[in-house]
Length: 448
Image (cartoon, rainbow, N blue to C red):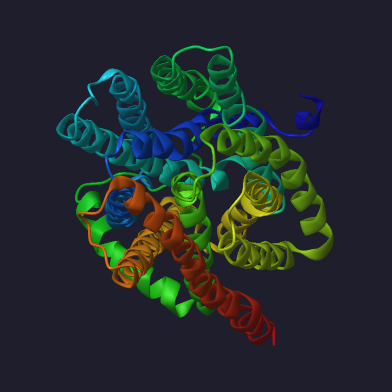
C-alpha cells in the first residue's frame, strides 16, 4: 500500500478501523434488508418496519452519544468504552448468522424470524454507532488540523477498498457458484464479525488517547453537568452551531439513502443480484473518488466539495423517484459512489477543526454524533410515513385494502416507495440552504 507511505503509524492504524467496520456497513446495512424483505410475508409492511427499526436504533444512539462522548474524555476511558461497543456490535453480528437457518415456512414463523433479525440489527447498529463516537474523537489524537482532511478522507477510502469490498465479493462468488443462499448469508454474517474483530487489532494496539481529562473524585458527576456548558459553547460558537444544523439535515439524507437503498430497490422489483453487484460497484469506485475529494478539497476547499456532494445527492433523490430498471439503479449507484465517502469524511474533518478544546474532543464529537444520529431518525421515518401515505392513496384509488392479495400489495408497494425517496429531497434542500448560504456568511462575519 504505497499510497499510505506518507502517513504515520497511528494515522494508518486509525484508518484501519474504517477497513474493519465497513464490512458491517455493507453486509448488515445493505444485504440484511434484502434478506429481511425476502422472508417477510408483506413487502408493504416490511419496508415500513425497517424504516421505523432504523429510526429506533438511531434514537438510542443519539440519546447516548453526548454522555458517551463526555465519559470518553477521561484519560484511559475512551478505548475501553470503544472496545465495549465494538464487542456488542461484533457479538450481535455473529448471532445474525443463525437467522438464515431459522424456520420461515409459515407466516407466523416468518414474523418471528423477522422480529429477531430486526432486534439483532438494532443492537448491532447501536454497537457500531457507539464505537464510532470514540473512533471519530480519536481523530484529534492521531493527527493535526492541517492533515485532518486527508487522514479522515483516506479512512473512508480504506473502508471502500477492503472492508466493504472483499466480504461482499466473497458473498457474491459463493452465490454465483451455486451455494445455497441461506448458507451464503450465514457465512457473510460470521465473516463480517470476524473481519471486524481482526482488523481492529492495529487500532487497539497503536492508537493512543493523547487529549483528555485526568479523573478525579466526582468527575463523572461533573461531566454530566458539563454537557450543559458544552451545549452553551456550541450555541455561542455560531460557526460550529450552524455547521451542525446544516450537517443534521444533509447527513440525514445520506444516511437514509444508505439504510433504505436496497429495501427500496427490492420493493420496486430490482433483482437482488443486480443490486448487490451495483453495491460492489459503489465500493470499487469509492477509493478513487475519495482520493479525488482529497485532491480537490486541497485546491477548492472542503466547503465547496461538501456543497458539490449535497447537489449530487439532491439529484439522486429526483432520479431515484423514476427508477424502474436495473440500469437506472446502476446509474444511481455511480452517483452515490462519487460523493458518499468524500462528503462524510470532509464533514468529520471540518468539524474536528472547529473544536475549540481538543482535550474535550470526545464530548464535542458526542454532539456531532447526536446530530448525525437524530437526523437518521428523521429520514427513515419520513420515508416510511411518505410511503405509507402513498400506499393508502393508491389503495383508495384501486378500491382495495390490506386484505388484498400479496401480488396486489407488492404492486402497491412498488408504486408508493418512490414517493419515500422523493420526500428526502426536502431534507437536502434545508441542509443546502444552511450550508450554502448561511454558513459562509457567518465565516465572513467572524473574519471581519
